[in-house]
Amino acid sequence: MPTLAQRAVEMPASPIRKLAPLAAEAKRRGTHVFHLNIGQPDLSSPASGLEALKHIDRSVLEYSPSQGFLSYREKLVKYYASYRINLTPEDIIVTTGGSEAVLFAFLSCLNPGDEIIIPEPSYANYMAFAISAGAKIRSIATTIDEGFSLPKVEKFEELINERTRAILICNPNNPTGYLYTRREMNQIRDLVKKYDLYLFSDEVYREFIYTGSPYISACHLEGIEQNVVLIDSVSKRYSECGIRIGALITKNAAVRQAVMKFCQARLSPPLLGQIVAEASMDEPPAYAEMVYEEYVERRKCLIDGLNRIPGVYSPIPMGAFYTVARLPVDDAEKFCAWCLTDFEFEGQTVMMAPAAGFYTTPGAGRNEVRIAYVLCKADLERALVVLAEAIKAYPGRV
Image (spheres, helix red, strand yellow):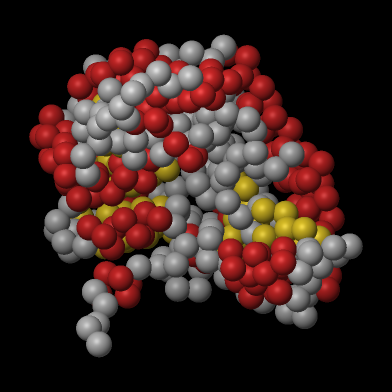
């Protein structure tokens, strides 16, 4: 029998989805599962986008341009201008979700064996995209006890060598909810400039910032305009994960030309998704305000509730809609699986993402979970009750 490719062997299973078969089996047994494991918002998508989908007036569902529709990119220029990010339509390439934007950035900017420095814990799929590109992730540790703030510049420089090509950040951060400060962003800028690195910046959660601190985009950093590749998506801000529309943004013409070759090879981003995303941009501001206020309430509900459970600790996330929580258990992955296979409380259980899958350092995050507060407040309150009962009943409680 032929052997698998090494990259397939190395490709990690998703910590977000790997327990899905256990959840499905729990549901078959009649147990209600509170899904705290995945960043799938339960809020309605914009009515303007849904209406556009219902009334598509086309006799042929054709290919779109490989870089995406010009009309959509022109609207995006205005959107980014509201965040003081000044672009032209040519700076924007529409992608099949933010995931494709990350993958195409890696394929265009990194050679096999090149290294990317990424603060950990980090979005688990970055590892998958790096493996696809033959690149290697070098993790720089942040810790729950320090609120996941960045370490000093010297820690970064310890990792930089002749193979280092890029730094990747997610701001606000998935999975921690951390928001990088002006000082931290300037520190990253100085490193990028000093060593002439790429800065890949995933900023899909910019709408969800819960502090008075300003949102600092990588595109705001002066002197590294040619180094920055910004990653974006409509999945979270419009609750439109399924339309698979993202964007890769850069002022670097050579990078855009390289990315376009990969875009042409996959032909075009989703036609229907672009129609929905473009129409969604016409939604009145009240939609974004409603979504934001709802997440503010959910965040308070979840973090207050977690920190009231004996032995549980979660720092207060400043952005996105996730938190990483430390639990009084021997192994969070075993605990998360046990919740789905051996536990229920009044016919209910919880599904969380073991945080170890968001680290590349062996053993890191062993007693941590990522929790997404994408359920309504009443469901979050009930899920917290169920979680507290699960921790009390778990045989591996510490």
